[in-house]
Length: 227
Image (tube, rainbow, N blue to C red; front, side, top):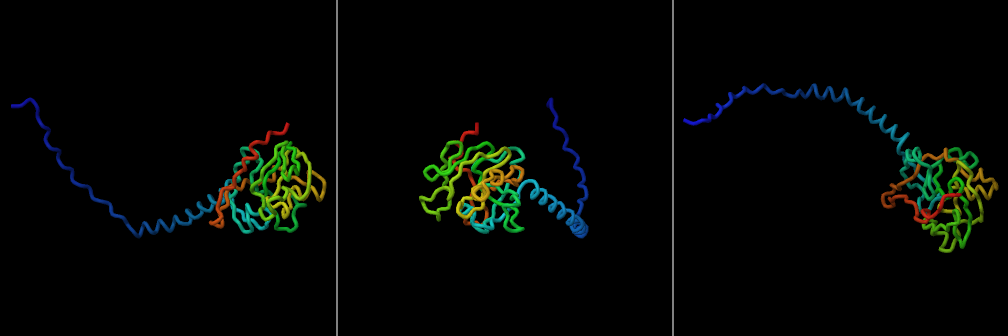
C-alpha cells in the first residue's frame, strides 16, 4: 500500500458542436459595411489633408534646382502649430495678392531667410548675411555660375514683427521678397505674414529619381537671434 494516490483520469467532456461559417451571410455583411469603411477612409484622408499632411507640385523654376518644375513635395501642416518657421526651411504659403500674376497663383514655395527682427543684407563677397553671419547657400541654382552673387540686387533690411523674408533658390527667376523689395521699396510689401504659412515642405517625393529630404543647411545654425 502506498501513501499517495493518483487522481483518476478526468471524464472526457463530449465535444461541443462546431459552428460553421455561413459564406452567404458573411458576404452580405461585407457589402453592407463596405460603404461605411469607404466613408471612414475618406473622412480620415480629408482630416489628414486638412490638418496634417498635404502634397503640392511645383509649377515654376523659382526654386531650381532644389525643386524643379512639376516636382512634388510633401508638406507638414501641423508643425507650425507648435513653433514658428525657422531660417533655412522650405515653406509653402498663401501668397499676398500683389505677388500674384494669375488667379491660380495662390500657393507659393520659398525658403525662409529672415525671421522677425533679423537684419538681412546682400551682398558680402557675394553672400547673404543674417544678423552679421555670412550664409553659405549650397542650394543656389548652379546654372547661375560658381561666382554668381546670392542676389542680383543689393539690399539691407530688417524683418518686421510677425513677418518672414523669403527667397527662391533660383534668385534670378524668383518673384520673392528680394524682387518685391526692389519693386516697391516697402519692407511690408516684400515680406509675408507668418499667419499665411501653410506648412513646411520636408520631402521631395516625386519623381522617385529625385526623392530627397529638404533639410536646413548648417550655415543657418550659426545665426544668432536678433537683439
